[in-house]
Image (tube, rainbow, N blue to C red; front, side):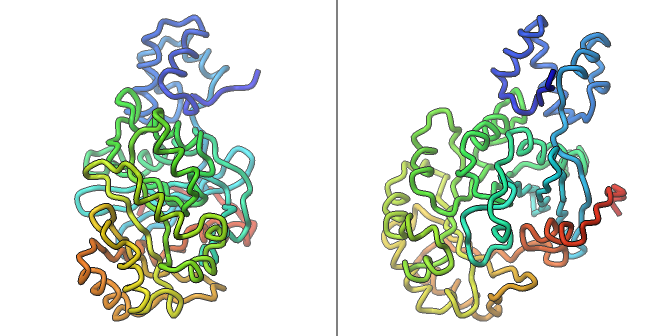
Length: 363
């Protein structure tokens, strides 16, 4: 009999599975507490369950979807990049980012990516497969277990900005969000979860129209303020044009406090000129209260044809947007000393073809 991973279940599904085993309904709450509150790694740690139930659980279910291969910790800012192995041998990355007043986890949703952004390291291998719900959720559970369960180390923010296009793995991403925001499970705030998309218009509309998809924040990778430039660096713009994308975003029903984030990776001599800044301001136009702009200086990686603009250029771009009263913020990449580009640690591992388990020495 094939085992099920309990982290693939939302709470209703967990309750149904418990009933199928002939157990009382309250066992679902017990299991959820151990998985999402205590964040245990084995059934033996579930001490308020009888030995008989624990033995049955071992026979029928799993609770770990990932295995930690290695990690790198930044000496500059304390961020930690994790490399996880999946059951089929593929690998993915997550990044723990300590920030002032809160901690964020950047998670992956796919092995590889099919979108094909020219400046992105992850897309080099194309799309291999979608992650399961359990593989998405377990990045949060195992990362939190690794950094510690003390209140000051609590991961309160999750950003779907790692490997892959989240909305191309729609159902598993939706269920993972339901698990993250369910008070009987992970219990995170909807406002602290952000889904980043390359701008797949029909999937963005689907998310906003789907009553079963919890209201979370949306971030869209814009990266250019004109169709020609965006098409050059983001081929997806050929079918999801900049004009159609902005029309869609301008009409979305955005709740107070849920401004849409426009992510703009600044690439030297591609999209970082003052002219580009003015074009971006005009593109936003009268809808400036609807958006927040995240300016992200490009994160170089070996073999990339692109470069990062110097700080003066970034500051000039930023200043122009503020002159239009557009809320814009510069987000310098964290962990630049630890294979910072998303997918780089995975690539390093694949290239060496030499995998060693992490010592888990956190020093």
